[in-house]
Amino acid sequence: MNIVVKCYCRTFQPAFRLAMPFMPYREPERFDSIQALPPLLERIQIRSVLLVTDRPLREAGATRPLEDLLARSGVRCAVYDGTRANPTVHNVEDAREQYLSGQCQGIIAFGGGSSMDCAKAAGARIVYPKRSVNQMKGLLRVLLPIGLELYGASVYRKLWELGRCAGVVDEAAAEQAGAVAFIAAIRDLNRRLNIPEKLPEIRREDIPAMAAHAAREANPLYPVHKLMDAAELEQFYLKAADWSEA
Image 1 (cartoon, helix red, strand yellow):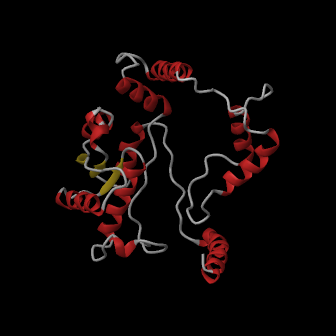
Image 2 (tube, rainbow, N blue to C red):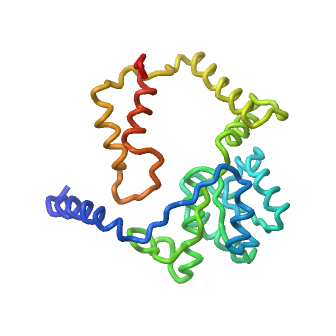
Image 3 (tube, rainbow, N blue to C red):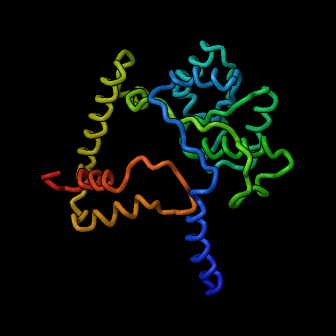
């Protein structure tokens, strides 16, 4: 790398990190169940949403509980399920067109990072209709609020749905029982594939440094909600390693 560019990058990153506390980043609201969505949507007066997901998830029935819940709550739900891995500009524009044609008021992303990226880019195109996706790439290009990011669905329900789709959980099983059965199935598969439950290669003396590094985040320019602090991360690594006292 050119020495001038390298010096610029090394100067820019800590300067930007110092400025981050003064920027209008929002702390995400967290929910334990999709049941919390209807009251939230009613509170912020949203009666029509676009659900952005991918076709395999929808065909597996993973989005059905959410779609049914919205319908029972009187919230119209248009669905864009054309998201592909590493969504394209075409995906973003299709989602945007469906949002506008359906007269939606909000966007819910359902799935992994691709669905979330597609939903966020579509939201940016909606609030900046005269800018293309390429014109908004980079830092501080999207300053207007593009909507409310929703993180939800209980852990038990997610595991129950995954296990049901994988065929290892009974349809009639309760969420917690189904989650336990799914975890047992994963552990059985790990044993058959000789995948270790512990990682003895992790050295105890390295754990504080690993936890401190993870707590600082790998990319200081990408602010995300921190689920664990350094002390909690240390306990996580201790459990992942083969320490009898952990």
